[in-house]
Length: 462
Image (cartoon, rainbow, N blue to C red):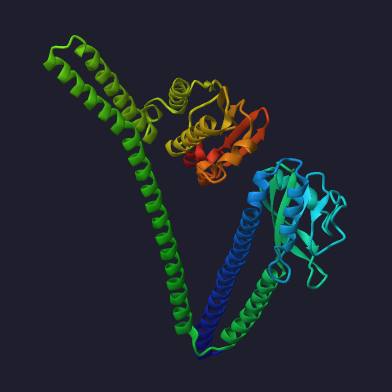
């Protein structure tokens, strides 16, 4: 090979390698991006199905609400009316409502008429899932979603089905409805097949075309960068909206606290001062009593201000650490509610990051709020300890359990509070576990070693 050929080879070969390398990289990136989009599409479709199920279940509950609430536990006439209503509630080609008692006996099934009157508790689908037993468990737990395989009425074939079950506890019935997911999976499979075909076609065309060379590669990189930037900007805007929403919620809460607490106390102080002023002017002997009442009301306002300040950011958490802050929180809680709470932090080494310590404190705060509002407990305990550099915290009480309280708070802030606690733990890679029984509830928050300051020091030393 002469010098000219060597120069051409040294010029062309690296260019071809660069084109093929960049083309392969772009193709893989496109596959990942489109795959992520398909995954998002499938999740959105399933979310839409879940919303549809909840709406249909609420519709059925509204239709039978009057009869169910007026009936007694053994009112057979009312039960028969409810059976007729549920049988008549038909929607779509494969949409219907079903009902079983908690023992597994079918009560309503408009599409499979051989099921009513028979027990199906041991029924399993082709994957071995105990369908009816699991749906009954969801209903007993306050309602929930369950996915399984079931025969599709329109085709007679087995298909994936997502159902929502809710309990009619007075009659010990499980009421449910479901939607089939085969259309979702078919659309996702078709999208994936198109993705694979497009990737192969794109790679072949670009790899065999030398003309676009560096310009096309550069243009493709610019387009991908711009697209990813737009996606990042969209996510940033969504995050900003969520932050603003959280700020507005907190402002609304503070406004309610100021209006319902401090404002009322200050109004009481003003009335007491006015009364004392009138008594002094009239020469009454009990003016001192009115002044004392005003002082008591003012002390109440001062305590309320301190409570709000402590809720926003406890000084003890920054100055004395998590254990001292939890002790102060429990002392105030016991004094305010009369529920005896204790703290066991003897095996705890406070080496958490400030943000992680704040997250645990907020979890404890929310758990105490749930104990006060929903548990009916008379005593409880918070325990904090460290295992191999991982911090654990449990909040337990002797109340009547989570299931009963969940029924009262299903539409209130209870579910949101639990979700907030889970998100606080998930932010640091931790988990939140809840165990509830008739004799009480135990909430366990677990943080990984990465939430500790010692993990940072170890990494820096390495």
